[in-house]
Length: 94
Image (spheres, rainbow, N blue to C red):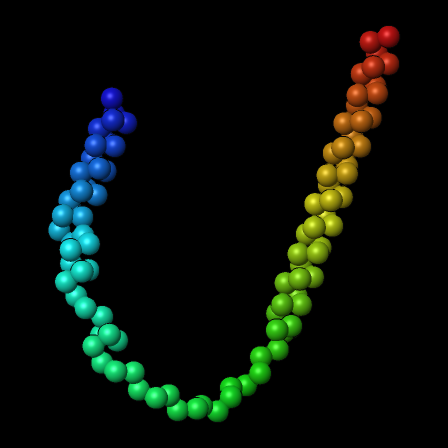
């Protein structure tokens, strides 16, 4: 019952928001670019070239690599431990 009341409340808020400032307000306002003619653009000087491989990116990549290797090692330890444990369990049953 409480979930239904929350859904009805959210629906009421959405309907109220659409009634107050919905698509009708957006249709009434015309874009400025359509009214004014486009001006010719002046050619600008080219900006500085950016080096994509900066020192921060290199450190971030190295950090991700270290975390990935550590995660793989921990996963290997868990899988190996479960394998050993299952073998011991089988020998105790027989």
